[in-house]
Length: 261
Image (cartoon, rainbow, N blue to C red; front, side, top):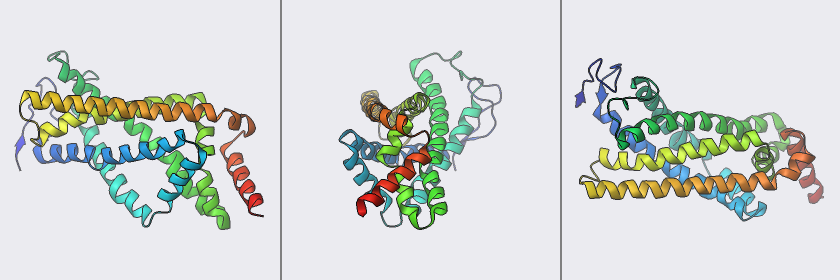
């Protein structure tokens, strides 16, 4: 395995470990496939909320009731994110201070490298919170709900539940920062991936990859923000009606049962 030793005291590294060529390639690959692909899929699925409650709930149910969805969440999402996050945090630990080595090398790509590291940290923090608040919370509710497990589990991530969450200003701000960080991290990472894997060798090819990454990052970021703002607006009446998420879930389930009768 080819490695390059990073000497202690060299600008840009604390020399905590050897820079492993194979792990760097795997790290960049996991950031685009499957993590980046999943992010695109996730935002596109959430964009159904822009069309209305019925469309969003239909999309959520289709995904939630897919065969082997738990295994897919673990194998295709959780494990790659775990590897990407651990190795990424290791890279952040290599930087000599919050600003990396920009005091020695102040060119634009180096600033983007530092931004890539820290947006990764912000994105990871948000992902952990988002998973706990939605997916993990859904499974915990289903375990405790008994015969109404599926109904209450779905109600916790339904259009109404998400709108109720986003109606709280602090939740909206956290989402805007988290999604902005994640989409920047993906968009800027496209060039890193192409260079690392030898897809773009010349300067013109690298400029094209950077442009594609920029468009991807900006486009996904704007889509995520549009989803969040739409939810925040539509959720205001729900936030006034229900003082807690549990109250909303119970109300949604009770309404569904009444309609069934």
